[in-house]
Length: 320
Image (spheres, rainbow, N blue to C red):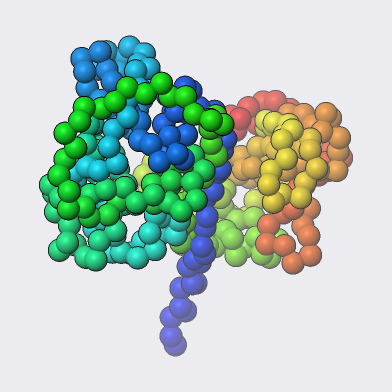
């Protein structure tokens, strides 16, 4: 008689992406517009230091600074690290060096990529220059990268600049994205597999007896493993909720809708779920709900009212 093989732990790619739009103050607007026009700007502090990239407040005195100056597009590497495997959306798609470059005329260093054939071609103190992007829009990517440069440091002092450009850049979209390979672990793998069978399974702590849904594999309060599986629900109680009025990209749900914390019967904490089958302004704390599954779905599409009387506040107040 052979022992049963442990269930396969799930793995899946996960992308966390949140592009957001931000406005620019006069200093950052001038800096990015300057890059679009092949001009590198910094700011001069009260004690004469030139900061590149520029900031709007002195990091030492916290005083507002607006004294813009133009620095050279050449500089010196102050430190570096080799990037053997570039990730998507990085400046170069071939191996390159991340470098801190103090541009001629600046007192601080700028982080960017250096196009070099290999780590043996990179060293602290080497001279580099900006390689401008063929198409520039007013972003740090207007500097395509740095490249090796045989020239000497520029002797001229930074030139004052009024920061005035035609059609200035006043806002940017920041593309924040992280790519993962996510593994939910033993406990959540069992939870996800049970959901595919339209069951909700948690795990009970052997010490405090709290039932975690979704399970975590261990009790964060007692610090002991949770291996005792407990089926909960399917019905539950709305403990608190919010009304969503902004439509999310790639989510085919009309606004407004309600997203709630739902304490399933037998669970020791509430999980998230969307409430449907009832006008959004009739959702309330204590509402009794049940899951609605779509054909082939691996998790409840939403929760709807069961028609039962509302739960008494004392029955769920510890789960809010």
